[in-house]
Length: 232
Image 1 (cartoon, rainbow, N blue to C red):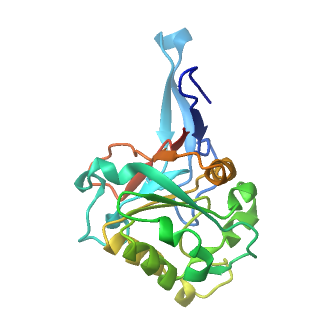
Image 2: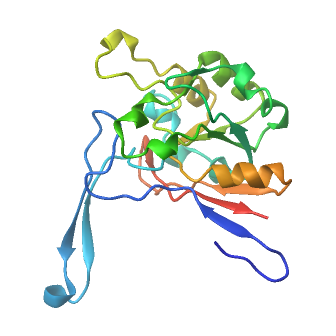
């Protein structure tokens, strides 16, 4: 966090750490970080990274769910930053389907250029099996968000869609919320953390701006991001 004497500002890191063996979406590449060069032998320290584009706190481009939709490089930079509105979804039961009614307090405050942050509180379950049992957006909720003009949505959970239980049949797998959001040209940020302090700031009337800039990968479906909120 940082602040100046003239204009107090707080910076909040909304990103999970990236490390070997960290949680990933079921079926995604596992993460491995090893030393490639060492100062003792090579004069410098350099890491070798093995990870997927959807590792940790990351951005989904529309291309993530449709080959004909824009990749990261086809999106304007303003898609990854803007004033934020935080929807308080804490206290929901595991695997709750989030409806427009759950977003009723946030929807009137949304509009073009706004970043919608979905605070489910599920980041508290990071690195546990329960992390997969997060609340998820129904198609109706995703459409309600799109209808406000919002094109940037972020969540402190593994996905905006339901993550299937390992015991579920394949037919239960759906990316309906992804397809509605991305089909409108929106980007999705997942695996955020530290959203409760933003709810506190929002309740106090403090403006919040979020930056979600991803790595500049070519022709990418998504990329890890260092998500940061600036509370004025």
